[in-house]
Length: 507
View (cartoon, rainbow, N blue to C red):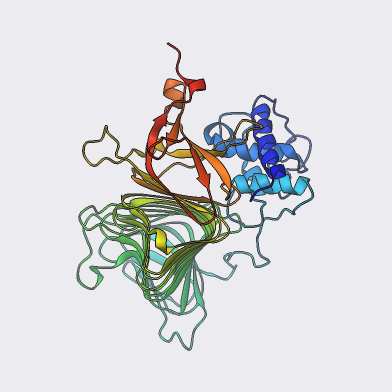
């Protein structure tokens, strides 16, 4: 249970955020070197209440106050990096604003959460692989070229740049027991299209890592014709052994995987994501192709993952899917996240939407982080949910009367919510849904706690009509959702809800 002191803390932060919106900007750029202090979101050289306010502004109104926002006080790239300060190394969220508040009260410390082991960076003597559209050049050993395929035969560092119109990077270690070290592929503005076979293929290796060099944009794709023969069921990135996708120190390099006909990323063993910005788009409506799938496990530890898949978003066919940090936004035509054993969410942000949101055989374990999962066909099985440390809220919605086709609600009708605090105006938290829905799961550490009352507000009408609607549930159409420990289920939820009396539009 949150104490009254913490409630007042949230209320004070909300009021400060509103007041700060009208404050003039103060620039220190001309006076001193840009601050890299953890928690210093406004880069003024110290940590105070204004940093918490800046984080909340950047999150609640990114177009104006986020990176590249229109307002002159918008957060900078360095400020955004400083803002990740709650020790989880999971990207910027309201949890970081709270961490600053606790720090100022002497009840916590600030940390970026980064380990002493830096992300992989290419070394000076790495083998250089230059892609020349219809040919490949290699500087170094243990990488042989045949046509538009380069085959890597020894562990080590391989630095890849340029474009390949139709070809492949093939990792094939002759004896993975004798050479069990990692094959490290560094993508440095590399653009690879595999039209008849996987663009990146790990045929044999104990471990392979795909490292996204900071500040680069890399694309991997297939063609307009499905693979045939031995590669008929292969993905654009196909691995027979363990594979890890990593970012650099800044973790701002981008890897975009566009799968026109195939699955995007597939592995016979374990897949790990440890950083970078990874964008995955599968487009085959006929075959319902998947975003990320592994025969064993999929683990997201860090980085930003965005998936738009016609089939499953993330799937493990034999083991678990785990989210331990970072940010994952998943839109799927089938299951957003599917695991043969458990789905384990302990940290980070997971926003998922599909025909079914979270599908697990053994259990859905939610012990931390922010989780927003929506579904059109079926609510997550409540008996499988294990909610330890933070409650889980399940919303079973009525049909949208304006949608005669299937009764689903548009994603524009996303929920936002606030603790009902009598002593102040409630501050809102907003996470946009990924697709249309009938069922919603919400669980947020440090945001929705047990033994409190939450007011859920639908805001799609705010800008166009000047007022919001409060979501209702039950036969009595209550606008307040009481939250207890464990799993909370609300039936007959109406996302359209009612207009609060104080906000009724004027005639």
